[in-house]
Structures are given as C-alpha cells and as structure tokens.
Length: 345
Length: 82
Image (cartoon, rainbow over all chains, first blue to last red; front, top):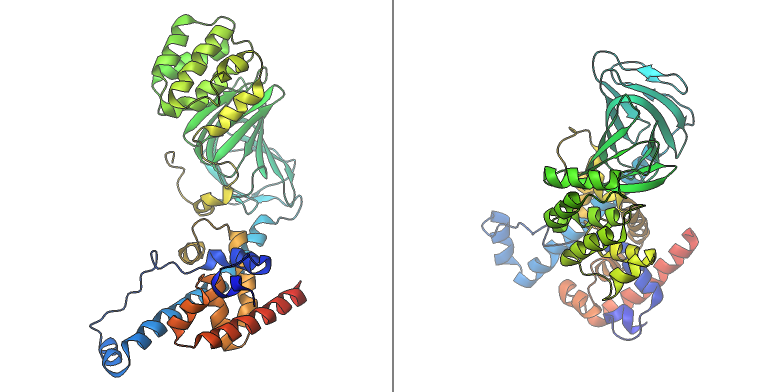
C-alpha cells in the first residue's frame, strides 16, 4: 500500500488523489454542522457512565458522518436527475403563460392590461409588463431566444451562460445566469439593469458584459454602452454617458467629473470608457490614471503601452479588477426559486 | 432540496461536482462495512490511517488492511463502472 493512502506521506498516489478530489464536496464540516449532543440528556448520562468516554466520542461522530453522507448521496442523485430535467427541453415546444395560454413559436404576443408571467422553458421565468410585445423565435434543448420589440420585462434565469437571450431591435441581450430588468423604448433602444449575475449586450458593433448592480443601454447604430453602477452619483453617470456619446468631443467638464467622482467600484466603467472608439488619447490617459489610483496597473509602463495600442495589456488589467466571476452561474442557485425581482445584490 | 444539499456539501461545489461525488460514494457504500467506513473516513473526511485507528479503536494494522483491500475493491468497482 502506498504511504500516501496510509497517512498522506510520500509521493502522491494519483488514483487516491483523484478520488479525494471527487469526494471532497461531501466532506462533513463540523464548523457548519456542530454536533449538538446535550451532555445533560439521559442517554448521554447513561452512555457516559456505562461506556468508556472514548467510545462514545468515537461512535457518535461516526454515525452522524455516515448519516449525513447517506442523506447527501440520496439528495445529490435526486438533484442530478432534477438538474438534467430542468436543463432539457423539447425543441419548438411553446412556453407556458402562468395566467393561461402559451407563447408559441412564431406567434407574436402583445401583453394585455396586466403583467404576464411566462416560464422560460424550465430555466426560469419572465414577467412582461402590459403592452410588451414578445415573440418566441427559437427554443431547443439548449438554446432559447425570444424577440422583444417594445415594453418591459423582468427575467430570472438559472442556467449555463448563453442559453437564454432576448432579441431586441438594438441587439441581443444574453443571459449569463442572472436576474435582470430590460425595457425597449419606442425608438428601439434597449435599457438593461442587472440584479444578479452577468448579462451581455451584443450587437453588430460590439458587446458589453454588465455585472449585477449596473445598467447600460444599447441602440442599433453603435456599440452598447459601458456599464455604470446604479449607486454611482448622478453627475458621474451623466458625465460617463456624455463622454461615450461624443468621444471625439472630449467634454472637459465631463472628463473632470468622471476622473474625480469615480469610486474604486467604478473601475470597470473607467477601463471600458477609456477603450471607447474615438476617445482621444489625453482623455484615455486621464481615465487610466484615475483607474490606477484604485487598482494598480499591471506594470509601470502599462498606461503608455495601452495608449500606444497594446489592448492585450488593457484586458490583463481588466482581469485584475475585483469583479464577480462570470463562469460560476451555478453559484446564483437561489435564482432557481421564484422570488421578487428585488434590488441588486 | 437544493437548500438541504447545500447544507451538506461544500459551499463551493457545483451541482455537477456534488452529483459526481455522490456517484463515487454510492460505489463505496456497496463495499463491505469494514472497508466502507475506513474508506469514507480516509477519502471523504481526509483522516489519516493513524487517525482512523484512533477514532474507531481499531488497531493500526487492521486499518491498514482495510484501507488496502477496500481501496483495491473500490478501484476495481470504479473500473467496472467505467
């Protein structure tokens, strides 16, 4: 027998190590599940007086460990079946409208006088405000697309990124495992506000990933807006929008406000704003310098290299920002349960 | 159900990871008692052989034998399952 299997000494046995890694999620954690054994209970008193203390100490944790593991195994197998069932869907099958009826493929729906709540396959739900116009354009085992030409919806989805998207006149709004509010105005501009997870705005000019707590809009004739956190000061929001709407103009007041009002939390906004097409180099430098006061640049010469066209370095910097990870959609597992489309978290 | 599973499993584990672990655990549970308990304590709980001996009251030699034979059975069973 390898020493590693016996006491973890010696060279790591790859077979043992692989099993340890696989089983690690089921390890019993006494910190989250303290053993609540009352020393005053009759059973405990009897045990302590009739059996060696050591034996009692040994057997009870063992029984609890096995009981816990058995329960976890049953639950996990059940969860796996349920999880696969949730993600699966019969192609072209209509979505259910909870108040009655269905949203069928290719059949436009205009929501009447009260909000319509619609199941997104089995992945979540969509609450559409009165007057909202929707059409189911694609629904398959792994891909669901609904077109929205006007109105407002709240969406809650718990699924791997990209499974669900809303197609608007301005571009696609792609769910990355999240909760969000989306409206499309009469001009066809999409306005997004993310409550949980991430959402991607995507059109012919580019794409933007918007994190929880931030908002951005998208029109058909330009790149989607940079995300701005909803709790930023209004002057900051206004200045950001002014700069990205007319980058070549480089409004000096707006630039001053952006660089002085930015918080550490606004690093994403600063970085993306500095990357907007047409933004003059001096303005970009000011924004990146402001960013560097909150989050150190990747190297001493990073800003000058970025200004000279090294975009990879910009994305290296992006990767160091303290943003929630995009790939752990499953961490938002609470989104599987119906709940109000409340404030950001 | 998810709530309960999250209570048992690591908070960092995805549903897939937990389900995969549960499948291995199901194979372990089909092994004879002596091997099963020793393997769970070693592979799931991460105890060493001497710690298992201390906890269960078995001799170190017994634990060593259980680990050796149990692990061989588990590996065979996992191979057959694959």
